[in-house]
Image 1 (cartoon, rainbow, N blue to C red):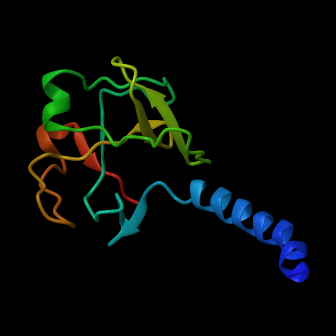
Image 2 (image 1 turned 120 degrees about the vertical axis):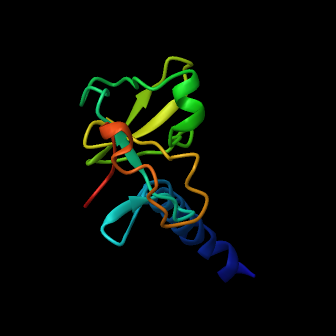
Length: 126
């Protein structure tokens, strides 16, 4: 029993380290040369967003068609990812300074129906 109690600090340290590593996991994944979310849905950028402005230009009705990619509360991201604050106060994930979105008409992982939509929406190629 004494051995168990002596190992508690080591176990606690391992758990803290694992938790920190998980909170810094890549917020987006790469599949077939493009960024996708953890469900495999394609991610997009919007030409009207100003790079590194910290804002999203897609609000209201636009956001219903192009939902933002949320940044989990308290999560830490590192370059090339960052977080922008939307007009409604929500936190949105950005890649290379550009806010990330999904396209509501993409219903299956890997679909890219929004690519070049109105020549202002683009898949994020890596």
